[in-house]
Image 1 (cartoon, helix red, strand yellow):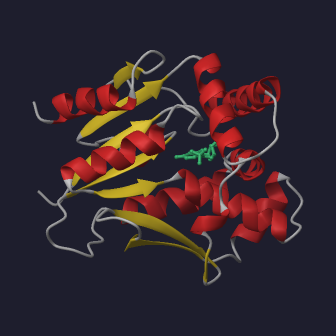
Image 2: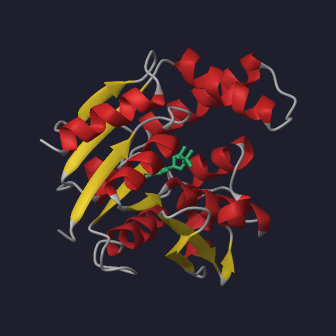
Image 3: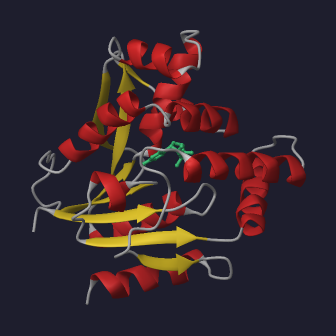
Length: 230
Ligand code: C5P
């Protein structure tokens, strides 16, 4: 079926991207990182010197052209790429600074509207006829973007576990950080994502909630596959 949507939501640092990519690979589906769109907008707004205030951001957004395409980059996986004003920015969006900017612009309803409609558009878009579905990760995919998604997951983990993973990842990249600073940033982003008025981070009532605090990635992926293949 060409219309299968697997939604994976959860807080930052929970391992959604890794799990979502693995799942998409296993199923032969496309992979969409919805956070990359919020990151692209946050990054571009910062680069353009737009004041981080709802009115100014909403006005600036009307003049920005945001696009989502798919490419096979380093693997057989069709993965989403983000374009802003004609520039592909997918590779510029890592890091906690862009993450914080993303979560700030994500509170602006006009910005959420633009991104949500782009994400919904993915449904019919098809580069390769053999690809039957899409795995989309984010914060509001099962609640707001695709309330009728085929299968929904909410991936969670303790704040300690998520901060520890982020910290190790940053250390591997050679960034000098302390665990307590990482935990502060993760907690701040959590609070903003969970408490915002529009599309806050909450599990959809029909989502399979998986707590990955003490689970390996492989186990999480197998659990998800068992729910999808029922
Ligand atoms: O998942 P990622 O860390 O890339 O997301 C960056 C930020 O974008 C999140 O903290 C959240 O505020 C926002 N976001 C969102 N809805 C989504 C995906 C991301 O509000 N579906």
